[in-house]
Length: 123
Length: 123
DNA sequence: TTGCTCCTCACGTCACGTGAGGTGGC
DNA sequence: TTGCTCCTCACGTCACGTGAGGTGGC
Image (cartoon, rainbow over all chains, first blue to last red; front, side, top):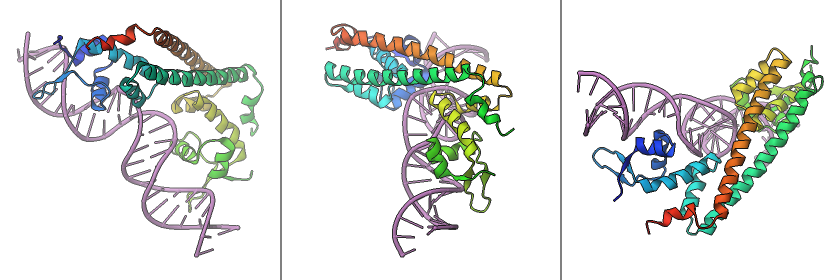
């Protein structure tokens, strides 16, 4: 009943590339509200925008597509939030590890004559 | 001149999977010290271990293989360090963004009746 | 007619992992 | 003989991107 948007329009409004939108259609993550059976043209509804933004946020946080799908299919807001929260926890643990690794590498780089020089011993 | 190690042994010492070692051989990132031309068996030298560990560290920090190769081929320690440092900077910027996104998502989740409810308006 | 948008294959990319089928040495 | 390790294809995975070749509406 709402005005339909073409992929291009929907792409601009959601900042998801057209290729990505087609991909999401194909894997059933985000289906267009309508598809013209003759031309194959995809049409999205404006009220699909919030959902597309949720998808984009979760994908930006590297949540796998399958998990994003699970989040959207969650029967209950509290379940949904629990799944997201679990992912955020994993992510933060990851960030911590990477941060530690970065620091450790930096300290190696800041120590000119140490482990870095090992490779020159053969000379 | 040093005792040679098989892939399996080298894998255990570097914590790189055998498949990964074969892959690194194929793409020329880490070549075995010797390859038996009859059997195709790969043999690594113990003094390749430090290099393998550098590779592992950089890959753990999601540095693309091509860039790792560039780091190893750097003619000069200062150039090498500059490349690594540039990557670390990019990484930290990334981490910051992700952290912001996580916080913002968390605050949305902590606010029960807001944007999350938009999807139910059609009902 | 020209442009722009849209479409469908099919293949590419990145960094491996999986699995089949087979060999060699203790 | 049994096990374990090693090998080479070839294809799979994940999430798209690229590019060819073609269509439809203003």
